[in-house]
Image 1: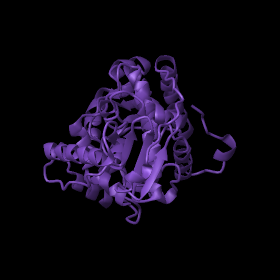
Image 2: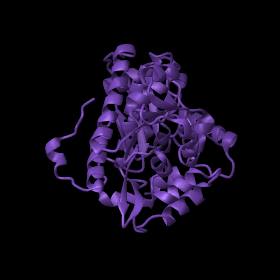
Image 3: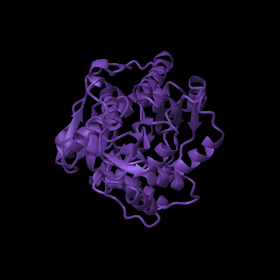
Image 4: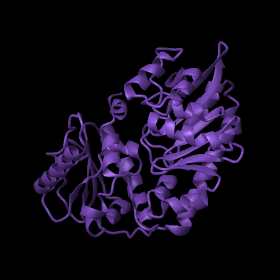
Length: 383
């Protein structure tokens, strides 16, 4: 993938925070690294003699984040949190908020503790398509291990304190001199360095390596087909805002056999679930009313299976896969349907590639539910 670093442009940024904003924006400019609020970045600095982590604020996009989008949190507090045996979401949020030296700043990323325990000045985290495509396959563990032998590889764990605590244990015996980064299965990748450019370069190099692997082992031939006719207006009962995608990729994806199995295998990376739900509505051998009823029943069953005290979200699809026609996204605004379409477009390509590696495999239904109903994820949508 393209390295967007510019020596000339970088001369405009002097302070730790200015350089952090610059390289965060560089990461955000590449859709194949992060989409719509995905990923997070940080820089460790000193303010008034105290060690501070400046970490991406929850709800900000890397492509457009500015200095005020970073939350300044005391390192001492974050490192103390990392050593705790248990920490509730509410206690983590309130504790991090109390440790901020600027209370008007946004809430720190849910990954703030993880950023703090990585002993390098600059930390970059993305949900790179190529990385999660490799890991979201039946041969993912083997392929990731062989392609990235000098990375710390972590099995899927719920983001937030649970993930930070587990990685904190794994870091006890880690030789940082030989560790080139961290890969979280089904989630994403971390790179780090004491220099902002070097950390960014490491991200581009690692993701490029994954892209080359996919080019050599998972090439997908998109057969250009004329989409069949379909009355899109029949979907207005779902949403007034829709986006129709009849690109060659979308039509190819929607022309696969047994869509009810093929297109319902879960999200590309866990954070996407708050935008798209776990699966789409499938229109294959049925009418819109019947498909909508099937989606509703299956969603209610999914909710009942894993609910604790949660209140069920609306049992309506966020997008539909329509046999031999393409994809239609639904939302409450044009911006929302554009976001969903972007995510689904990246997911379709990755699913097709992962199938070339033995089959696409996302996180479990239970893990999906925990992400969809995680209060810290839902808070992002409210922002």
